Image 1 (tube, helix red, strand yellow):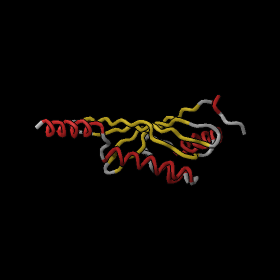
Image 2 (tube, rainbow, N blue to C red):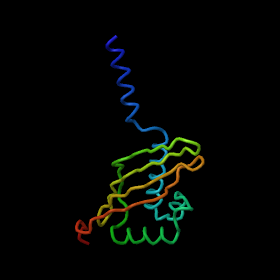
Image 3 (tube, one colour):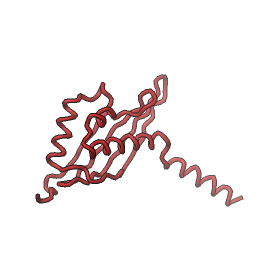
Image 4 (cartoon, rainbow, N blue to C red):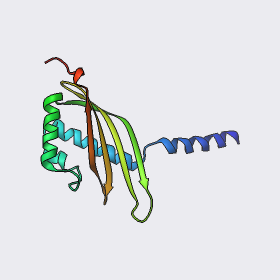
Length: 138
């Protein structure tokens, strides 16, 4: 009986901290985003953003500047995630994913706020942090 209770508690605990399918879908969206940027395909990368929230000219300006100052993407790793769900008449879920991005000049920490719109998850906002003192000599 003790083993049975322990197993149930374990499932409840791991069920609370494990990623659900929507988080995995949000992660896939960001993986696609970085893949497009690594291929210098900003057109398809931009399509992953909610067009109501992001201006194409601003997007191009920011990502050109980040690549010029910090270098191209070498690799990226998810370092944190959070899901917030508002329940009510217009229930919605938001996801905050944070990545450490290894770049050819200096690394960045990039955070993405995503939201499920209809049946797809779109990027709402992004934040890019970098440390100028950590730039690699060229």
